[in-house]
Length: 68
Image 1: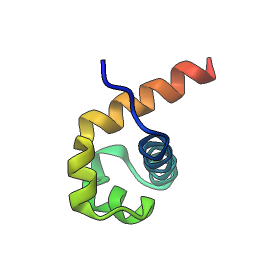
Image 2 (image 1 turned 90 degrees about the vertical axis):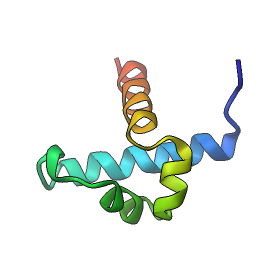
Image 3 (image 1 turned 45 degrees about the vertical axis):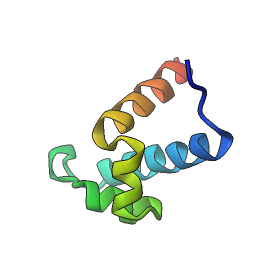
């Protein structure tokens, strides 16, 4: 199993924070990957390289699990 680097974890944390911030201001279904990239300071290409929506959902689930 491949382990993520600390930088990868930091990028995912920023992405999750950006997603939650955007979701507090607008409906989830209206948030685009471009919105997420812009809000998290990532290039859209970087977001796709991370795994796009699937990676974001996994990171959101992880944050929720840790919060419970």
